[in-house]
Amino acid sequence: MLRVIGVYQVLLSPLLGQQCLFSPTCSNRSAALIREHGWSTGMPIARAQLRRCCGNFRVSLNADDKIELRCSDGTVFTEEELSPAFLQRYGLFVRSVRMDRS
Image (cartoon, rainbow, N blue to C red; front, side):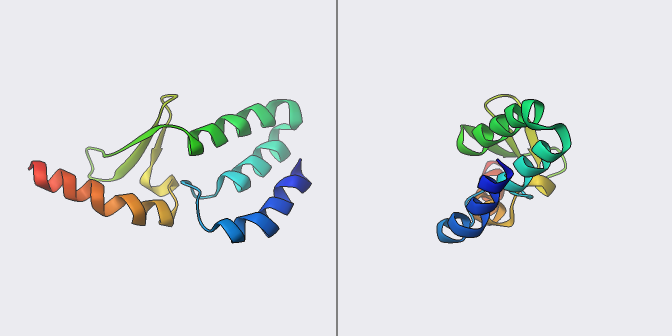
């Protein structure tokens, strides 16, 4: 599986462009989880991470005026865990909505 992830990172990821919501990317997180926990434990965690990236989520500002992403499974990711591409795509919009409501 680590080889499959490596092939994806080298061949497909550059063609698709920066799509991942997270930093480090889901493929990097998945490889690290499999290395750290082994196949039987790491793979289900990696699968859950990939579902978060492709699944339903809500973007909002927390009390500190930082962007956070809430996934449909209840997991919350802070601005520091989100990719620059994601922050560029959603950051200004979320902050402008907050300003409009003030």
